Image (cartoon, rainbow, N blue to C red; front, side, top):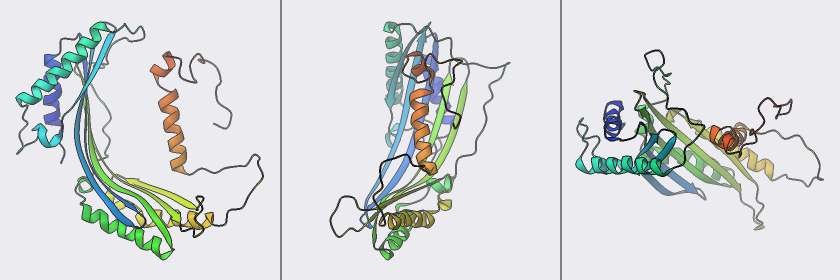
Length: 296
């Protein structure tokens, strides 16, 4: 169940009220997820987690301090019979993390690249609303996931291969708020399948063929679980026909998950302002210069 925009705004409003900093930013990340793992064609683990993370950034001129605190949902008291309860324990933790961010800011060196936190544009703050939440996904039970995993195992056994992987569901809530009146809230849900099929190599070699497939969807019922399993199985079967080739330049076709992972690392390591200014990015000192080939 989502905590909700109303209750999380009370939390961020409280932090902004007690902060001593000239400017303050509050980020809130709420996660509620459950996962079923399987290996060697059988389920071996069911796990679940709940967490509420509050991050406070305090700014004194160009000096910044950041601190975080975790509030487990089961004990936080934020959602109880439709009432938002900022208990004394929660207030103490929020006071502590807010003070810590402020103290860190006081002793931090100024960031010459920092200007100020964003505020209202022409008198109002507007951000795009994205539909990415499906309540039915968050209500999927371990039994329902087990029935889907059973389909995977049946396909794998029919082809005399072994299935490994995980099937998970979860929801998240993200909040961004600051002392200039900005408040943005976004809920999302996700069903995710990660599957690897391993061939049964009777020779005991470590180079047994394998195949990977993944599926994700906001709506758990729309996960193409059987189709993904068949893709992974087919890759494994094709891998049994491997032949040795000479070293050389070969054209390689990458699937979407492989390209997505490459782009994720590239964006994380190279496209951020911090990495650029700290000269850790391949983009550093390259303004106005061509850094990519024609094929990118």
